[in-house]
Length: 228
Image (cartoon, rainbow, N blue to C red; front, side):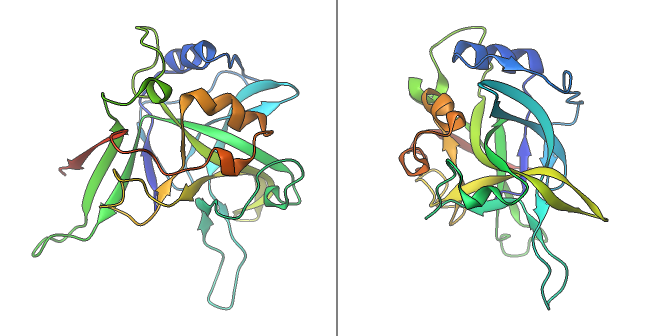
């Protein structure tokens, strides 16, 4: 499952991109400092977008919270979350006792790993980005101002979760579903990518999750092997 992603799009471009989709953003905690590192890994902090008080806000939260401990040891990071059979709407129990809701994670790339070739010491690493041939519902209407290649990952944020080292707070996870044709050769699951035309529907929390969550259509993504 996805445990590394990329977000190279500048904040200004992301802000314009959301605005063009009728999702004006506010920043209740100030403008986020995105830094220069494009890679986002488990426990890193990155931006998410969520509905709040009839508007939409962008905040920075940690990717993953700790699951419950067991006899096998301490809880593992919950960085991916199965979407099948879950509602993610209304007073859904999926939000947890500390509250929470749907969120959208803006990214422009994510990585998957496959078994290493014979004789190789490392697994093969593959980068997925939006393909140039993706339809308008996925790429948005042609506009030179739009952030190139930005897509939204369906996520769930929770409050009052275990962040480790005795800390609690808010964190998010990425939802997963069966893989689409572009991803199936590389992994048995995929993170849920919401088409741009449905970003508002997802964030609004009214449209049933089952109507929005689906494998990504063929030809949406471009895949390239990462040479290290």
